[in-house]
Length: 588
Image 1: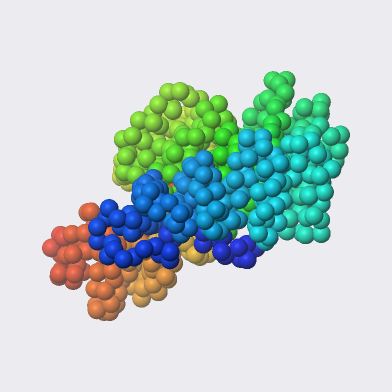
Image 2: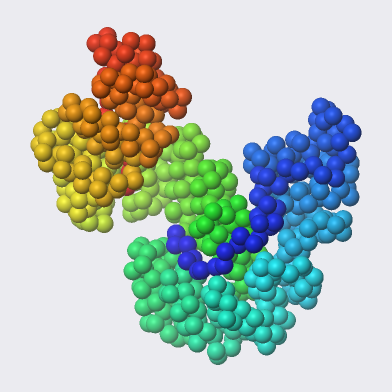
């Protein structure tokens, strides 16, 4: 999905908030606890606290909440534990519990800013606009309050029908370039919500501030145009955005709605939806930086305010995937509405994450079900092919790719990756004439994409045919992707296969620098070092490769090389020359 590219200020000044919001680290301190017990008994306040801290670090937030709850049962006024239990509830998406704990934390001297935000959002969601405003106004000043707090107050004013008050609050951002996208966008949303005739001009200003590249601004303005009888203008707006993000499911759905003559709902049905947009905007901006944990918490708050906010759920799932928290990603994807244009992609990602959890058959079953439900959708077919290829089930993968190619019909520049993938499968199945045919087609259609250059070039080197052209292709791939350790490995390994060991070492050392955690590349470097007589270093690289948990079939080969050396291990039949790292399953 397209992330809102809004420019926001640096949040380095919010270091205190970042510490609070990092669910894995907020439990690090023990100040304020009675440590008279040694903590060896887990059923003590201190034991439960430590168990909660450990559960939080390992992202088992349900367990963390349970242990901290037990601690509070023994010491309900402990400000330290209250504050940490509040943050865990917030990170876990239990907003009602977070609000209750936040109120108790404030009463017992805990940090107010985050707690008052949650209380304000709860009040806004429940239509208690005056209380929402009061909670923000009582919060300590700072950059955090200046942005989200002000936007929340503006939406509370809109909820009370106070347009002038809302506009006045938003105008406090004037002259602050970093906040301009928030000011203009929420000005347009509020005027639209209040059915003010100035909404159209405000949306135009927001479009300018966002450079026409913000998904949410386009969605909101387009819906406004459709509802006000300007569907042709809305359609052009959607097509312009689609040019930046081809095939975007929301734009396709919008264009189909216009074609069908249907009118959309407003993006904002109630003030809580507006505050959700503010939280999403900040969360998406933070997600582009390094603040994934904080971004996830803002997005959880956005979903709390607007449970139908599928764009926020999708971005939240993406954040969990980047953090390799596959279970949380699955849960976020499952929350996407069944009738949402984003749901098909969510279902595929659920299957991908099941596979990452080693629940491969569950993933296969889900993708098969999607294929039956959506017989004209090529994506579940391709996803299953990719899954099979990843597990080196090449005949099954090739069959899926063939089904996808047949469904598409005319394979062009937009679909070259299917030919590449099927070519890889054919090569691994030792059907070289078929593989070469597919890879050559993919090379032309992709305008010589580095992956195709690399794979076809190395395959020729491996067979010692077309050597001059093959090395030229691999070098070109490296020139285009000099930071790709797998492609640099291919060049080094090609030199190795040609017996040019000194040249191989040079490139393989570079590949290891780029991809230090890959066992195959480290193994390759060990082989090349052995061939140039640097045998102590070779054994070091092989041991290092073993420590990285290589594929099961690679372990005895590396062990044999450590026991006997490379040449004798090959002579004994306990090791063989392998291919370049990453090629069997390195997708596009």
